[in-house]
Image (tube, rainbow, N blue to C red):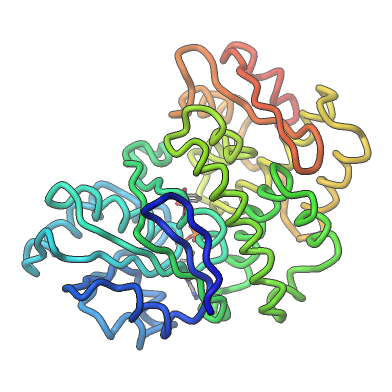
Length: 340
Ligand SMILES: NC(=O)c1ccc[n+]([C@@H]2O[C@H](COP(=O)([O-])OP(=O)(O)OC[C@H]3O[C@@H](n4cnc5c(N)ncnc54)[C@H](O)[C@@H]3O)[C@@H](O)[C@H]2O)c1
């Protein structure tokens, strides 16, 4: 039996074989797959079983231009309100597919098959979708839950090491903010071991999904509690805005590193726990140097879509497994990010 987690009353995550689960979960209607050309290469049989639209890769593809191309293709293909949209891919594909499905003809039902570790533990879960505008991340989007998310760890075997490690940054984030046992598991394993051991990989993915699902269930539209998921992300988004050298996961690892240094400096976390976090980030091989000038990063943080007027919420680790949500005035943001 597949393991499952209910995120909301109309959205469930399933862990298990995609060949077994998809026929059970897809409605008996026309399905159009949205995916990217890489995934079409690595998992051609899966994509080719359906009518499909392939998008480009990378953050540049998460754009209004891509949306327009996909809407046009759907119109050409005669997609109507009964069409089911299936996003098969990583975070870029699921962010686009979710947005397309929730807006085309005022909304179609949709589901995801997640094919990256980052997608499995974060991007595919929780109902946020959207695209970047003017270099700012996820500026336009909706909250709209997929009917289902399927995670089959066998699909992750073809992931390049860089992408696999990037996903581990979100697993580390989740452990810091809500699961101290997951943190300990990560301390006692390695990237190499996780790539070889599907049972252990499934366990860390399920644990991460459970933390995210429980936060989302409490606060679906980010009115409060959901902000904790933003741990490390304020700086990560600024890094992504200013440089194309880092993937999202790599930027998150730097964000986690710097916010832990800030927490040590602000004394919200003890020396010993703060050092354990810094050691874990290092152990998983993340580079923590930033190539962008401090003033540019601070300016990008000031433009973050999550700011509210003259302030922004910053999430600081307080213990392994616990965080604090602090509202900081934008004029004081440099004091929090002294180490960038
Ligand atoms: N909606 C959310 O709540 C949420 C949360 C976290 C991140 N995100 C977004 O997710 C995006 C990053 O997602 P990502 O890291 O999955 O990146 P991605 O979708 O770009 O995938 C990374 C690369 O791996 C390739 N790939 C995907 N699956 C593969 C497989 N099984 N084998 C081989 N190659 C494969 C892709 O083609 C791509 O080149 C960012 O835009 C980020 O903002 C969204």
